[in-house]
Length: 212
Image: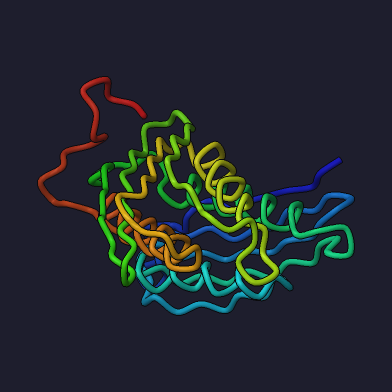
C-alpha cells in the first residue's frame, strides 16, 4: 500500500512564487518520504535519508542541476538501504514530472560528460514521456563504504520510470567506484539542468507531435 501526492506547479499569476516546483510525500509500509523541489533553484539542498553516501550523491544532483531540493526519508534501514533509495528515486521522478508540467517552452534534451579524477561519465536524457534507463556503468566494488553499489542503478531506474524520462548513463573510463558514482550523479544534475531550461525560441511543446 502506498500513499503519495505531488502538488502541481504554482499558479503563473503568482509572480512571487517559483513557477516550476513540486512538493509531496510518499508513504508505504517500508518508507515515509517528503520532498520539495524547485526546478529554477539555486543549488541548495537539505537531504536526510539516513544513508550517508546517498545523501552526498543527492546534494550533487541539486548543486549541479541548480535545483532547490529538500528530501526527508525514514526507511527500514535495519533491513537494508534498498527500499529507501528506490523510493526516494520514485518520489524524485514523480516530482520532476509534476514540476516540468506540459514542458511548454522547455529545451527537453540534456547531456553532460563529467570527469571525476580518473573517471569520466556521460549522461544524456530526454523528457520524452517514456520512462527508460539504459545503463552502462560498471562499478568495480560491490560496496562504496557501506553503500551497495547496485543501488545506483535502482535509483536511476526509479527516477527515469517515474519522471517519464529516457536516461542514458555510460562510463567512458575509470576504475575508482566512488569516483564513478559521483561523476554519474553530477552528470545527471548537469544534464537535468540543460534539459529543463526554458528557451524563448521554443514555441509550445518541444515535439513535432505536439504532446509529450
